[in-house]
Length: 223
Picture 1 (cartoon, rainbow, N blue to C red):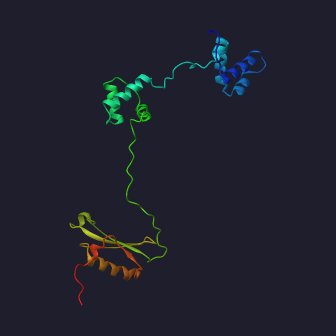
Picture 2 (picture 1 turned 60 degrees about the vertical axis):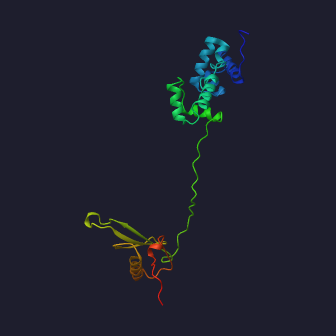
Picture 3 (picture 1 turned 90 degrees about the horizontal axis):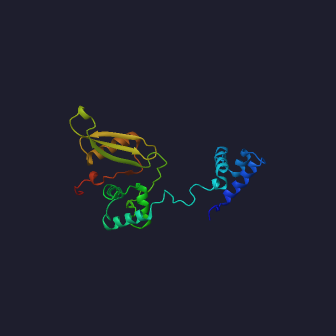
């Protein structure tokens, strides 16, 4: 019925406080505190109230369809197009087709939300790695564990035209490094470097290398 407005509780309270302002009972600044809004905003509301009366306190979007909500017709059309014509398309490619062919322009995130809500699009999950990396606590004492590895590379760059193998030793507890160069990686470089290491640091309690076959001889043991 014209002339009657359904007001919310908040709007009713504003009507009461602005009425008190107009009667000189409280100031507009005091009213803004009671309404829980800024003084600047309270001045805008007071101006609308003075010009339009109670109607000026009604929220401007009351009874209007939200602009953020995609029209149901467009939403249904998007879902139909995806199901019938573009079921295997990515979001980006489908978005391009909607714009260039069907004259539908929406944001990528809105399109993703629509398709996910309808169960038409599922986010691809990353495959879990089968390998499990376990944390190993470092040794507490020097010489408990020595890690050995050989690395073949042109270490001397232009100063030497051949590749060299660097036999590297790392103490697991202290991080101290020992290294020597050899012409190749094999049993002799491994044993020779180990001898030189023990001359300097002593015999380690244990050693570890991830290239066991490289440092093994295929000759049979003789009597």
